Amino acid sequence: MQIKPDQMELIREQLHTIKDRSPFYAQKFAGIDVADVTTQADFEQLPFSEKDDLRAVYPLGLQAVPDAEVVRIHSSSGTTGTPVIIPYTAQDVTDWAVQFARCFETAGVGVLDRVQITPGYGLWTAGIGFQAGCERLGAMAIPMGPGNTEKQLRMMEDLGSTVLCATSSYALLLAEEISRRGIRDKLKLRRGVIGSERWGEKMRTRIANELGIEIFDIYGLTEIYGPGIGISCQQHAGMHIWEDFCYIEVVDPETGKVLPDGEVGELVITTLRKQGAPLIRYRTHDLTRIIPGSCACACGERHPRIDTLTGRTDDMFKVKGCNIFPAQVEEVIAITDGTSSEYQVMIENISGTDVLTVLFETNLQGEDRQRAEEQLAAIFKAKIGCTPEAKGVPLGELPRSEKKTKRIFDSRY
Image (tube, rainbow, N blue to C red; front, side):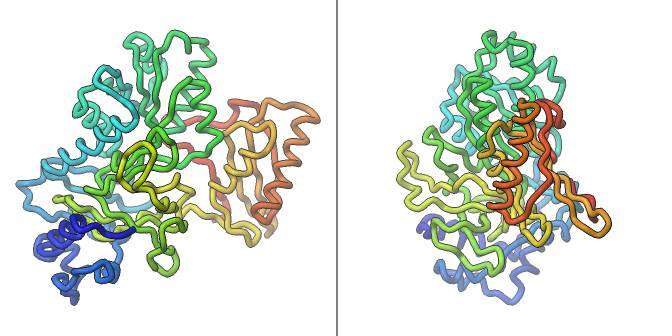
């Protein structure tokens, strides 16, 4: 991805004062004369920022403005270590809302839509981001937050919600409950804006079909504003990233070398306008590719596109000498006859031997279920390199989540 002149100007403006404003970058760029960064080649020599770097300066070591200019903070969950605290200025909050409103517009949401927001509020960036974007656009926000499915469905029906904002896990839970109650014809849903976790095509199709909606993937992460920095368009061929706010690169996860457009690697993001906590060459750990020629999308949008995320560099697990990503498991599930979208992977060490079990939901029974189990194990072996114990379970038996669904359980450690 070539840095455009206006992007380079914004990058140079950030670099010009960043060491004075940010203790974090004063240390990160110690010994580097950032005034010498005038070309893309110069920029690509700058060191990456990592999540562990951000954790190391907890709580507010990322802050790059005086306290008086900070109007809000958000935080990562901290479930896998020290949380990351991100301060926002008033302009950051506005810029985020502008991007999010653009996402809604790209998804075909208008001022007469009624947008039911189910992601969580609080320190997490999701709920409040959806609401700010909705209000900026001028649509009606219905700020439900997560859980309380009974009330969600009542509000959805009584208020005539037309847009559902949710994690894929909660969208599936709602879809199943709507189907169970037989109330789909009473609802006015027509679009879903879904994000916060990687999900497979089978799950996407199932949600879309059961709810009768068009689904749009929204992208973002707490460190870079939150959700809303990109979204899929009505072509459904990747997600547009707003290049006036973020510059994107894809790099080899092992070497850090910038990869040509079209090659899969790790997404790296540089904020172009962020004030409270600017980030230069931040490694997201998300695996994707920049779609070649992505600035000429048939939807008319000129912003570049990244492909649907294939996984994360840090969600790989290793069993019997095979490196496995959840996306690969989802691919096997998708092409196995008779399977639903939901699965779990259980990894245990029994008497010194690793045992891999794949549980999958199916409505098949008896010999048909056994054939599906054998087929899944054979496809898994052919595509990934090791043979699991495949076990079909009835539809609805695996747990559902109101947030993100945990699917990989490794008890070896």
